[in-house]
Image (cartoon, rainbow over all chains, first blue to last red; front, side, top):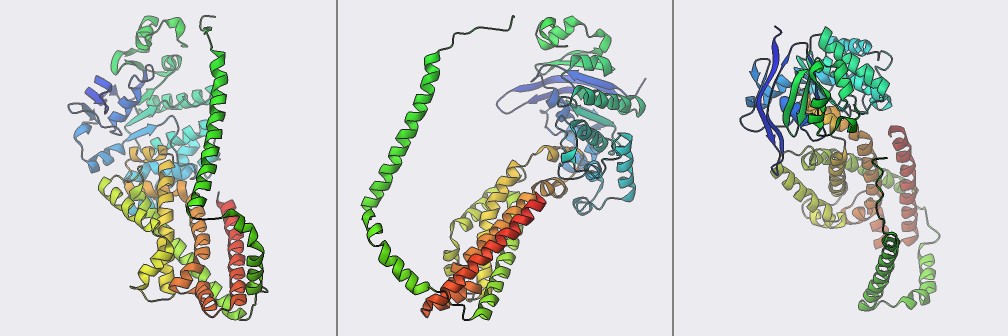
Length: 256
Length: 271
């Protein structure tokens, strides 16, 4: 039995204006697991991811236990310390485009530095070496000093993954990591994420729009609709009927 | 094809879209002309006089200012150098302070609402008082001279760049801020590592523009507050040495044009 890294209970989020984005979402994530979250736009996938590291604050009464700690009750400083252990990969890469790939990767260590050292980029030698090593692992050894603005989409996303990995995270959250990429770059990124979960044992929670991609790479798939989990199980159990239920449309109307 | 719906399109409506737009333009133009004419009437401004009196006015102008007399060249060069230093110092210090103020003002970074509103109020006030008025007001508290000119121009640069920097920070892509927050970075780390590098070229560009502005402003500020070429212009004006005044004005124009070239080169290099 693998150890549980993340456990949410009754995770609920109501936006101002009364829009219910998440309703009593409960699920667990185990070490080394790759879980894909699928569902139509507006189903609450992004909100779910951001409620886990509290980039969005969940409603009162929600519970997110990460690595044995209750995240929802952490104070500002403890929250920042906990965020250091959760990597995040974004659809739009969210890099600082005027800085080099190396500097962007080192942003992953920011939480370990004092305000002064962090602000003035006084990084430790071992962190810099690790950043270069990670960029090499991701096939970017020739792009280390390139400005991120000059990298291709797939390369930008690999810098994003390196930034998450240098955190030595216990969990990686990926918000539509391949939605802006061409099919070839998308495959490369998904292979890396799969490798990270299977070989490094870091669980990945990946939001996806592509059901077929989820079926290839996920160990487990969570289907969301209107803020609820309507399916949670191994990919083999995701039948056409269940896909129809998640997307609220007939299977021939879905490009999957 | 199942998705190919054929809908009834009203073609006449589409044509009216453009006639409506053109009518609006004509009405706008007419209102504009009416307003100009009405205000000219109200202040008793008679348009034909511009043409009637143009020639004598020009003759007087030429007689007073031409040819420009570069008599005290050394003094002139010294004064323009002081003006340049004042403009650079006030422009950079004003922009520097404005950047921090803008962090408090911007919606992206200004988390403290009370501070944000307070700072907005103060900068709006500073910005909306023209530098000539600042010179007159501050003359009572600070003595006539270079320091007062520096202070007045710093206020000018500060007020105007603070607003622009706040808008600039608002428009900066907040994605990388989100990423840094998710790694556990704190406010000043995010400012230094994300907002600052992303906004640096535009910041420098506007700081340069504010220095240019200060060189131009230095004339009127110098007359009122003292310091640099403006002070010299004030003296020439009081002693009715108009040909020398013209020489001083030419110096400023040359200075502005030169600095314009330099800042354009710097902009090209950093953008």
